Length: 262
Ligand SMILES: Nc1ncnc2c1ncn2[C@@H]1O[C@H](COP(=O)(O)OP(=O)(O)OP(=O)(O)O)[C@@H](O)[C@H]1O
Ligand SMILES: [Mg+2]
Image 1 (cartoon, rainbow, N blue to C red):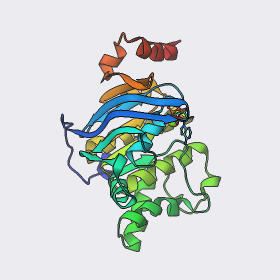
Image 2 (cartoon, rainbow, N blue to C red):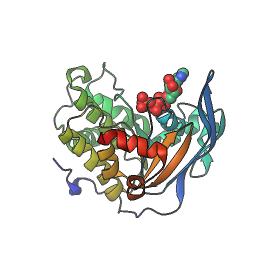
Image 3 (cartoon, helix red, strand yellow):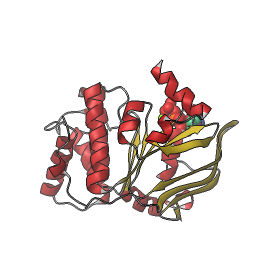
């Protein structure tokens, strides 16, 4: 079911501009002997949806975690509006996490809390809402992800797809400026995947959010992206529009896209 355009009205649509909001600059990172990045560079422009593709274990999730200060690069800068997240203290990171929300791979819900309490958690942490406002906000975002009325259920009683959508509802509830989606539709049926894609498009068009999506689903990537970037060999090896990616002759991009067709 498509997301109703009237349900998200907070900000006027903003066209994407050339101004980078996020910049990964000369990033190096290893875990022990395993090298993850060797001089990775990537810019994300204001208001755009950029999709990162790449093989399992190539470092896509780690990149998103570096942006909210859950992980640090060994060298290089992670710039958010020109401020280096890689050097921030916990207090500064709290401010970052008010503006940058992440939909974690595998939802990452607290099983001891109800669905409603899970969604309310970051709201309580970052915003001062009245009880009624909070209840209304939780109900509204659950409706947006096509799960109205599940506030009182436990995450453990939900299907994998429903858990993913609750994770998404939690991320958008604080109405962030930037949203990071780590495999938001992996494991979902095609109709639920469409719902998530529509939501990603709405967050950009209606709220002007800047977004980074990590996905293995190329149909989703083609639907939601303004630009795409490929992570391979410890760097961003290719980036461009959807049309440019589809027509790319870059061997890594071709291998990735052609594997899907076969
Ligand atoms: N905390 C950690 N400690 C040690 N190694 C880690 C840690 N987190 C990630 N890694 C390793 O870093 C590499 C990149 O991990 P990451 O989770 O970013 O991959 P990914 O591209 O998201 O893969 P997938 O598509 O399977 O989710 C992997 O080899 C992973 O095992
Ligand atoms: Mg990952």
